[in-house]
Image 1: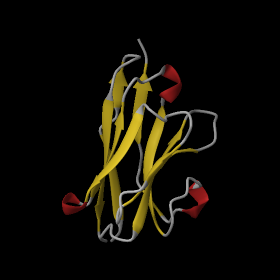
Image 2: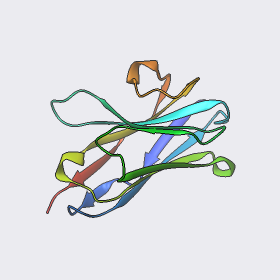
Image 3: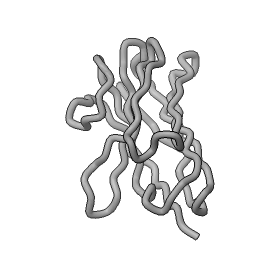
Length: 123
């Protein structure tokens, strides 16, 4: 059974950091692209970042460039999203998703989704 499980969300003050994890089971991550998306209340789901598990190439949304870093640990079948210099506008439910193919930040192109983890940036 294909499963993606996110963890690491929580409450953090502006300027703080969090690291999200996305653990995959039921399938190897090889040949997959893993994307991170977020959805705030009343807003559409937004692509944040994605990584090619095979070669490590990455993409980032302009809103997070220079603050977020995506990485992977193939041995652990896990992808991470390091989030630094967090802002209140980063508050959302964060999801990871998987697809076989090129790096894209379009949610509709992803086949498997995790359940999401809440990130709240507030003082």
